[in-house]
Image (cartoon, rainbow, N blue to C red; front, side, top):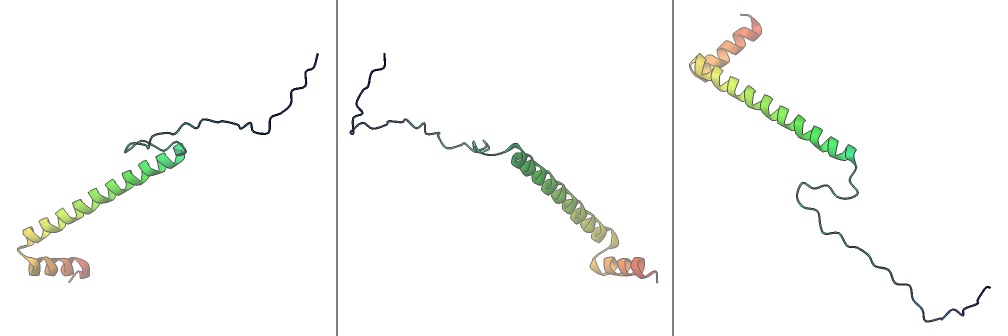
Length: 85
């Protein structure tokens, strides 16, 4: 049998909300997608490769300066190599 129960006007709904602690360093946020994390890793790899290439270029420049006997010999050798004269 169906029983009719009157609804009280002062009743309130209660809900518990679980609060997550803030993410630690390096830990992705809960709403972070896998694609976003892969992009961050890709950018990091590209930046490291660029830094290594730049460091190599700088070291070759210093080596050329030392081998040619100073900045004037370096510039003269570079102009000779560039123009062929």
